[in-house]
Length: 183
Image (cartoon, rainbow, N blue to C red; front, side, top):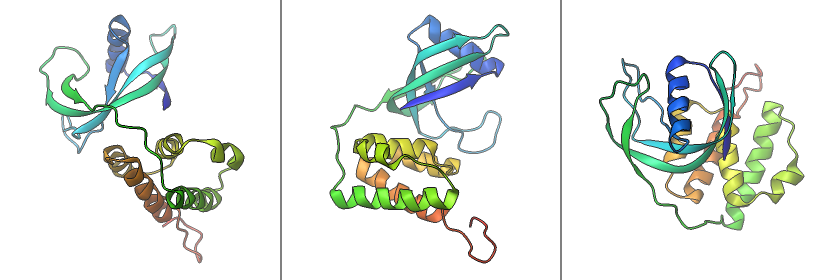
């Protein structure tokens, strides 16, 4: 998937500058809890900067293309303003396809979720997506909390990720009929 990012914090500006001078790859990993520095989850994603616009004040607008998941092995003791880790890249898996019943469940729950959220969706375009693009696209754009996003990232298979997305859309898309609030 492609992820557009606006880079404005000094430590991340330094990281992008460093990545552009090297192999254009950066890793993204969520903090597990509060702390200084906060502990990190074990699984993250490495991406390659495919497009960059350097702004006059030192900020960047970049597009990051996801390449692979990685497992954190250890954090390095470095002098850079950004954190660095040693990680093991996950080998790319075989292309997966969902069973027709899984695909139907995803599409059905996606429609209910989008309707409940008031999203306008081109369902014809959605129907043309391959299974992996559909699942990863929903995982990327759905307004799930960080813990849910992390669980999706850690799902081992496309089917596992699809089942989790259906559960999350059902949970996050429920409305209280009396108050009209999201539950």
